[in-house]
Image (cartoon, rainbow, N blue to C red; front, side, top):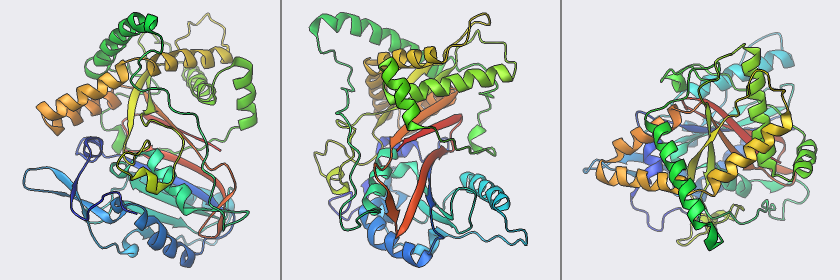
Length: 423
């Protein structure tokens, strides 16, 4: 099933254009942990017969045509150019050694670019046992290909149920997305929403253009952070414990997770003896703008009038980090409630779609470079970004490899990046 109805060069979407510029070059890396050693002879047919036919972008390169516009052009795919298998030689073959090798390898490939003369994705097969698993698949995909929702749908479409491979994997269910245009359900709320939206949009303009977050242990302020060596950390939390907090406070799982991140940041600031909290620090929380948040089969994503189309379909929400006075007692639950309040305000505000409209105007009037510059400022002026995905709801296999765990991250950003995967 192709993303495009015709086998002809197709223009990049605006967001794909922004994410593949000299200013912004962002990749998504997904790590899939296997319970058994990796057999590459089973992986190659999966990529050839399932992944590549899933969407024509997996077999396309970006080229610039006469008018300066970028387009997707389909090419023949040589799997040898996309599958990487690292080799390590050591007599001390221990979990500790391979844990270190894996961390160093992740940090290395996170900094590397993918050649533009081939489709913008790679699969790395780490065929050494670590303390977590027997082998590791590492998918590296350029953000121009799509967003996390598109990639997770692809993943769910190429894995099989561990209990019964003949039955399609169950897609995680979700409620319909709240309206992303922020329109109130009650007419009496219109004036209040419009006023708050105007305030929020004005604040976003200032944050995006003129007022970057202050320098803190979390944010150095250097514009080349995305190109410097990085450290990738994976932390697992108990979903049962998260749901316990969720039910007690009557909030969402996302509220609990974002609150936990904010609490961790506050504790980190204190550990670093950071005293200057007069300025405001903000997080960029990514909001899926599709009409529905539930995953659907890949072929439905490519339909003309799809309610959950393929591509980069999200907006940025500015969420201020809680600022506590030195005399105030630290209450973890307050971080969750504060996260809920601020996220709900932004989600129900017109400021988020208004920023999207502004980007379209900049793109049309001043060109893609001006719009890219604005997106770069949005990302660079914030202290961190937070995105989340819902993973498989059942045990799955990838190319007959039982999967033990999954996590993902974005690399190439100019800030700390937090990714949440719910399973």
